[in-house]
Length: 321
Ligand SMILES: O=C(O)CCC(=O)C(=O)O
Ligand SMILES: [Fe+2]
Image 1 (cartoon, helix red, strand yellow):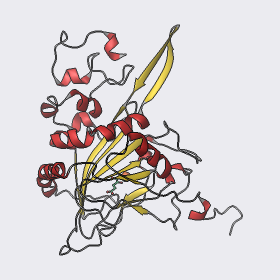
Image 2 (image 1 turned 90 degrees about the horizontal axis):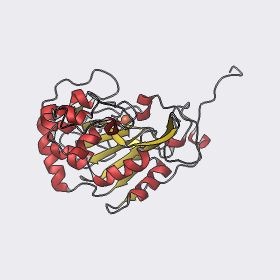
Image 3 (image 1 turned 60 degrees about the horizontal axis):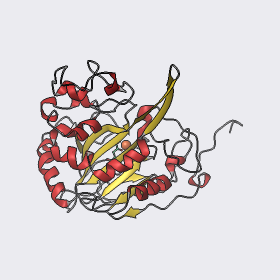
């Protein structure tokens, strides 16, 4: 062995694995943030009503069934199907997943940023909130292979040193996966390494890691910081077994100062979403991140998609600041 050979890391080289919390649906946003800060992921029971899950299935099964493209890369298994661009495909998805009030509160805490600078001699402060990073419905069928462990914040070139504890502001994103079916270790539940959001980003996951599994009933949700190592598990069930499909309604949010992974302006049918409520359009990124980020014709993109005239647009620079 050369004197400079790097020793393979073991889970014993990392701090003890934190426990993963399962919270009740009346948990506060602060409780959820505390659970995420500790383990990087947590489950919230009954996050979405079962009636809503039925509506979402009615909206998305025809689209999943029409998915014929498959996936030619290695990131997703061939025995999995996905629908993206979900907001304009389903108002229920937009309002009850993306616009879920408790989810929005968690993201407001973790992904808002405040910035102070000078305009000549005047000190000015701007706050920018969270926005959608991507939207995906994931169906994993029998025979689906295990997805490689990864950190989702690599899309923003995140590279962080090890930290003893989580601090608000360090995350590039947060993910929400709402169970559409039972999610079990056998049918492909998302697996993740608790605590890995605080590890040095230079290191790969240790081979002897012990994952936690986001085991859920329909309507439960798994929330996860984007710095946590995770991936879908293999679906080792067979077609004649019950609960052989793992279905998740997923969205990631990021800071509105960062580029969205899924381009909402092109992924969305504008003739549909122009009638969506303002708060949903804001979360989709059809808003100004103050100061000045995202304008069209010096006004909010929301005015552009609603084809408002110059007079109807809230006037002046103040709208952009
Ligand atoms: O399907 C899953 O459980 C995880 C999917 C995922 O990690 C991704 O798409 O980035
Ligand atoms: Fe991922």
